[in-house]
Length: 475
Image (tube, rainbow, N blue to C red):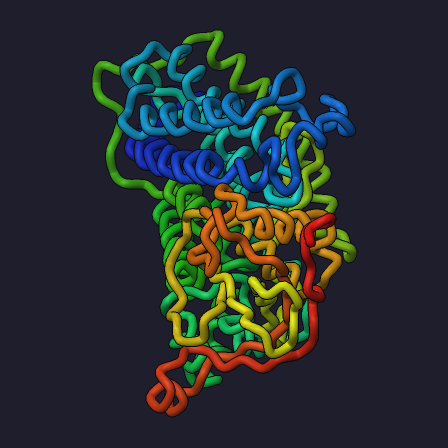
């Protein structure tokens, strides 16, 4: 990296600008999802209420402002503040402030989201939550228009991107044998958590192309990351290849903001050919250098645990090693399901629930339900309930903490819960008398079946997931 002095890299002026604005957009989506979904998931009458969580989990294990005070109105204010701050960063407000002010402005969404995630429980147990916090913490120290981006922070961003990709590649090779045989993608496009509009197309690609997909994935995750630490333009080419791979994943499914955040990280490694304006000082303030170097030393020391995890034969995915989520380990799909199961939730107004009664199906926004409905694109927006329903279909154990509460809210006609759904067959003022859940096997229809039936899915009943249930004390 060329530089005015050893500490800064003026050639990456545009790289920082692109990275910061893109990260602000991801923050915006994350806070918007929190603001719109929290009441039913985490609110005072939510499925996993925050007050109940903070009563049993100490602050030191899950630092959050909500340990000191919680109300639904306060959480809403907190989340919408995150939306506003993210929008301000997206508009470039940090560049209009002094260096210390810009750093504080970037610190604010990190603190806001940390408080949300640390009380989010199962709803916030995904790897991209920690990834957003880790990336967001590094963004605090990238500086603004008063100084060229620090070399050490740019290195840490590449180090994080390396761990994201290389860790994901290792977990695949150590996990399911189908990754080593290059056959996982014969199933993955169909069985992934939330298929997108093109997932059925990808699933029906010829099997030799699935082998090419899997092999390309291994190259991108196990070999290309090392090129991030080579001179330009090789590092830019490596980052560009990662961007292309992530956009392929965006087209083939819905993975919230995981792919987009990985793209944001890769963009920070691209050399766009610009340089810092002539009026930018050649040296950074001494206090800034001291802070950045101290933080870098801390993060490199904390990297010991994720590196040890990557090298271990017992590698785990998506693990945070400290309550601030400063340095984490990542990975996805160490195993791939061969069969897709879906939990279908139904209600009836009948006083006596009969197998052949008038059962009406609840429709979710993202997860498959109606076989004639084409999958939608929602990423980078995260439909948390829909994702957890996929895990519930894998095993009832994943649903133990919240599924009963979901059924109870449906029986009550809870408006906040119904807003999480695409369609409820019962209005809030006339909820069902009984709710049940059944497990179905889903598969994509063939091209011929699609032409004949108009359906995107074919489903087969497997077993009862939850017997007909009603509210306690109802007659």
